[in-house]
Length: 467
Image (cartoon, rainbow, N blue to C red; front, side, top):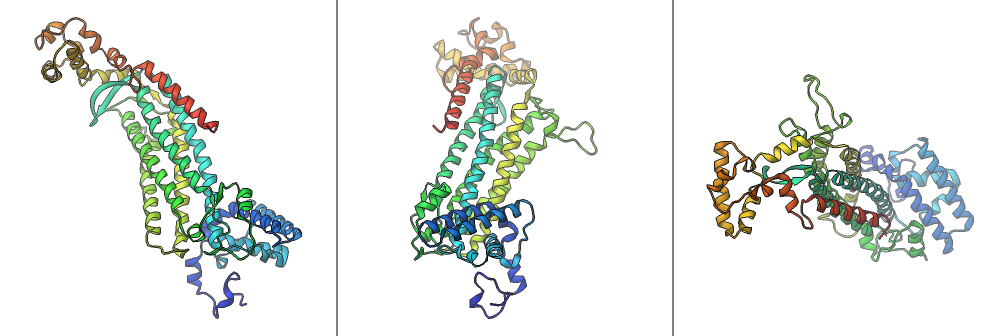
């Protein structure tokens, strides 16, 4: 066989691949990242082949020892990656054959690069999901503790970015935590479908060798082997599912980022972020820019793009494997890296948020945030809600003219709109009274916030324990 042709398939070809085409079709520059998983899968495959008698024990041991040595070369940066060998699989196999001779060529018995790469990606995804889950847990823990600490810190709640009703800062942070709890469920659910083994599907139809796929699945920690060889080598829906999870998660982190950016501004002045999460301006010395949340907000778009890229990649592919699928790795790798880094940044930053309680409280006093409380008060006094709504609307209009909040008006001023109003109205017009009145599960009352934080803490602890 000509030295200019690829050793894994060159026997059928009469001329070498064009140099540009070799570079264009090669994936080794990015799929070398899968080397640990490729070696892991190959060791399991060789172990299984020896158990069923396709390899001798000596051949198995030579292959495994050679692969372990190659892993060391890669980790030390001593491995020579070759573009003409196309991908991570053939680079490792060629080096193995250099090291142990013809036995290295026996490793590929009973498998194809099609099922090999599908297995490598699933192993990679499983490893990365476990790392991402650790960061997600850490972020949720930080949010729960921050919410518990700030269960009584009052801030304005918004709809349409307009002051609506007073809430507590702890209640707001727990809203973030609820978003992440659902994301966490999506991640764990995705892991179940990732952890199914394609190896043994071979190119598309299985193999004639007496392989035992259950043995290989057990060796690699998969829940089970895939059921259909055509599907096993050709679909990447598990990668699409992960990038869907990633897109929803980044959407949530972006919403949080937007609020953090607003809250750190001089116009809101609700929180302070430690200097280590911010940067300055090259021209304006007074600036302290919230770069971490801004970058997370910006990175959301690239993850959305990766989801669309993978969906588009798969949408027109006939069964079984097609070269298109080589394009799955770069968007998937970047989505993984982006999610992991964004979660790490948030997990470090969120517990360090310092609420500016006086500013939050003063902002909650503006904008007639207790107007609904006054309406509820009137309803409890027997006034129909629509009539109460009208009375409060008139009171607010008066407050706008007189530049007084409802809580700043005298009893006489309030009674000009309804004689039903009595001295006890001021108990519900205070911010503290307003938040305390929402005393039900899911409400913003401080004792409910603490109870919700405890339930979230227990649920996360049970999740850690594998419950």
